[in-house]
Amino acid sequence: MKPFTKLRRRLTPAQINFYFSIVCFFSPPVLGSLVSIAFNAGGVWSAMLLATKRRRFNIDRPMLALTVAIYAYCAAMVLASIVNGTLAADLRFFLPLITFLLFPISYSTWSITEKATLVRIAILASTAACFGALAIAIFQYHWLGVRAEGGAGNPIVFATVTCLAAMTCLAGALSGIEKRWKLLVLAAIAGAMAIVYSGSRMIWVAVPIAGIILLAINRRRFTGANVARFVAIGVVVALVIAAIGSRVVLDRTDFLVSDWDALNANGDHSTALGLRVAMWEIGFAAVREMPIFGHGITASRALMKQGFQEQFGLSAGFSHFHNGFLTAMVEAGLLGALALASIFIVAAWNAARTLRRSADPVERFGATMILVAVITYLTGGMTGILVGHDILDATLMVFLIAGTYLASGRTVAPTGKDAPAMAPSVSPQP
Image 1 (tube, rainbow, N blue to C red):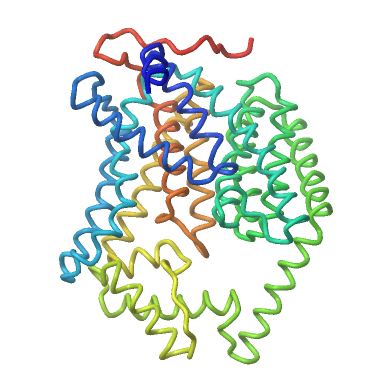
Image 2: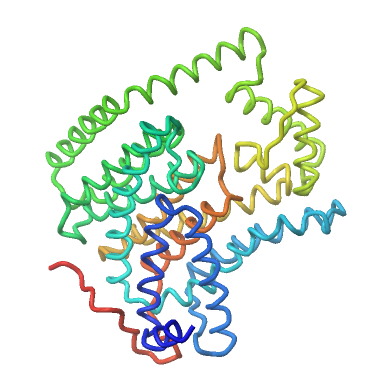
């Protein structure tokens, strides 16, 4: 313990933030749950520092609005359990909400880092993450013969966080903040290839949507001819990636067509598509029974198992309904779904406000991070997981905190002084 204690004493708060930020942006695609462990441990440590007045709350208006939305969602989940009398049974399922509750605490500690430094950390750590994700994806698909799942252990989760990393690289290249744009473009392509290997079809849809949004945000930096050239290059790159991953694309397309035919012709709900349709039918029936407050988490899972058995003759059960908002409605009713939606609405509003008013590249980059996260999560969450997975929850908080701080936050000193804290000597590229 002595060497660790000495190291901790030598590191300044901004230096600790520096290495903590690297872990948060690099680990989701490559090291999986490490991001959750790091974020939650960092949040608890930040709470202790705030309690001992070694840190101070940094309350900005956009951050406050987002905190209200996040806390409203957490409150809706707890209220549903109270109304249904399942509070004791649901307590263990409330643990993931701690990640959300740490939002304002982690924001206050993260904002002691200089914005230019945090931007470069996000870009360069994401670059390394994309190359790492591709290496793991190739190994898992070609050598292990499975869909790429990275360090997440889940193809959908892996694809989601890799999409965020790839779009962060692309945003860095288009914004001009990082001059090594060729490296960033290569990293984004590597990330896109890793996503193809994951076989996660909805994230395949999210990638071009997010890419188009990035071009639209940065369109003022380019002439009309350059934008057209970027679009043409993007189409060519997409075709090349599809050609390289043609086996994956064809396999996943065949599965979808086969599942569709089995569902329509034979009413087969045992396929991946059939299970989703069955879950959605069960879920909407449950919503009609308890539309305002929902059934609570434990009861919702029991209803799913019961519905599979009674309606479809299947012995199956999942922790969610493969649609984020439907899951929220079943568990916490309309109040829960609206509260969950408000998180993404407020985040998108904050980002749009910054993009409309600010020409500062760092602030616009932060707003871009927010929009990329909103697009990726909402697209993937329509047929998969939106929130409720440790890696997804922690990564969402990382992007909302960093994006909100960069877009509209203020840098503060660790212990209440007005001068911003200094980070390790990592300056923006000239």
